[in-house]
Length: 181
Image (cartoon, rainbow, N blue to C red; front, side, top):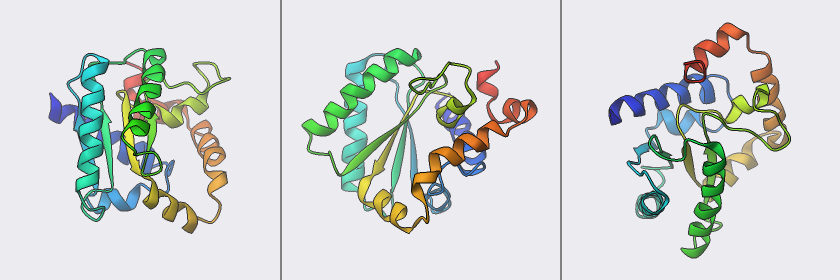
């Protein structure tokens, strides 16, 4: 089961995030094998907080040339987006409490992701929709370096919205099958 979940998330990352160039910084670490896909068996917040801390500590103890980023996949918990969004506040608190603020940054993905001031069916939400709830742990220093090298980082969100809005219905069905099951 865990292997199938990881394969599904890897496929999404390859086809959607890298394939649509939603994150211009994702291709290189994927090719270099510096992305860890970790499935959490958590079914409640306390266990998930412990898993999150374990992954932060793993990043701390592993050189970035070996492990640059981690996707913590949460298939059995936080399936409701409101619960997931609320949990992100706890995750940020965990960063602060363990002096990781400024060292690591969290990015969020969810099958029902919805940006503020959008309707659930708005296409722009596809930019952060994934097969499962995911907390992406990023090394802030590396992210800042990549952003500094990118010609116009402020344009990334708007470019992403335009890209997903240009998808045909067939392309959406192919890239986001988990949304149409």
